Length: 237
Image (cartoon, rainbow, N blue to C red; front, side):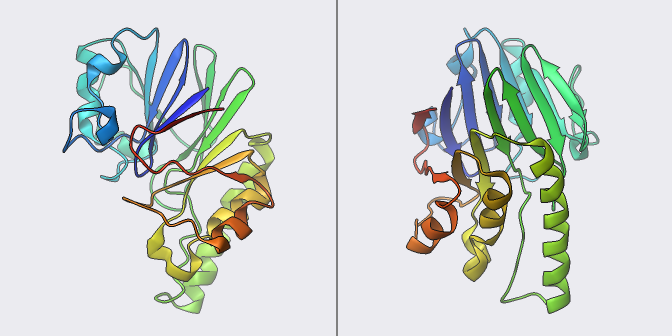
């Protein structure tokens, strides 16, 4: 299984017989994968290509992905909130708890604490979780104590559901967003404590994330912190 970082929350997960593109949105500037940009010729000859979008926020979904099916067959799987925005024959729109299969790839949708869904992918013995915008959006410096308590309760409720079904994860892509300031690691730590993925790959950090000692202290008792920072950077797992 090969994982390639594109930008923000966008990744390619690929096997010899199947490429999955998740939450693609950066289509310019640039022309190549090293810019975080894909063009149809990049995957023209692959046996199967699936494009997933957890939700419709502009940093997770670019309508350009719908034009790719003019070049070759593509599976589209989207969070349910995109049903009103996207009209494409054959597109699948998923709600939390629903499962769909694309060949031997099984996709399960879970909830979010923002728009849309999060996705669990299983193919053979490989398993991955892409959180989308699921996080403990914990604005310590800005929110009231009541708002903070509600945000945490909402997140922990979703996390309880996920931890029951998303066991034995190889990889989890999870937001570590610098805008959260002092609580940047809070949701990620709670997530890895509950699910124990082998690798936690940060996302949703924009252009760059500084890996602090505190981040490593929070994550590495439970998961290996695996940081892909440059568009086009890949690892094999």
